[in-house]
Image (cartoon, each protein chain N blue to C red):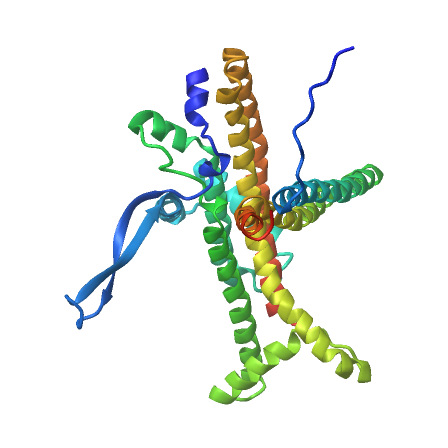
Length: 302
Length: 100
């Protein structure tokens, strides 16, 4: 048991979080004036986080089309299993925020929820430990959402989605009022930024408009940033705590040999249950806040 | 009477102050978050006791609010970690070069 724990631990708990390079490909620039048409500049690594994202995407691209092929009116079996999650995301998360526009955004919201959830859950499975035991090569897998790059990408998608949907909604409203083409697009674009600020009546509204506009702009940048950091730090903290607990075993080996190792590994297994809860909650929170932001951008309260 | 061994001479420089700041910051952030989420949990449990049929919706709101509070808690924790690891090398280089 001690050998197992020693092998699972590393000297530095951050090594379980940080993406590790699996292989590298060269980055070539087109410079025909140099010694050849393509010149090698540096290397782009293919990291373990990229592998996990590809595995998640592959799983989703295989499972969900198979599920949706003949979706029964009354779900049974595996359809019922996923129907719970689909209905929860649609009725519990999306419909309170996007009342009438729910069906428009459900594919996007479902994809985002299941992408984050499957990435979080694949991090709790000890794929890395199994790969190390079989192929003697460490850090082949990891948790994709425990890297800031992946969560920043997801938050950027939320940012782009929110503002694009808001601008398109304002353009659609301008078209309804009778404008057409480029005029509707221009007025819609300006109207989106004008309607970001809540309407305060009277002279006070005119005076406060610049301050509220700057506040809304800062909020528009900070909200996706907070989304990314929240998901990243929650996933990373769980794995850092696990790695730190396992780190105790080789350090205190001379005092408690197999007792400490057994207790530590059982404790880590119990901690993984808490990490399961955190994985589910974080996927739910990310999806819920995305729905909230899209609902605020598209709602007719402006 | 047992003679205690003398402690090593303690030198306070930027390196130690940076680590002290990072560690104290992490502890303070955890204290603030725990107090806030404790208030939230107390209010949620009390309102569930007053009206048990609204228990599901109260639980949902509690989860959402606690996740939002933990969001900026982890943001501050990430800053403390950066001070403790990445910026520490910068501070160490600066204190070795300029001070001493």
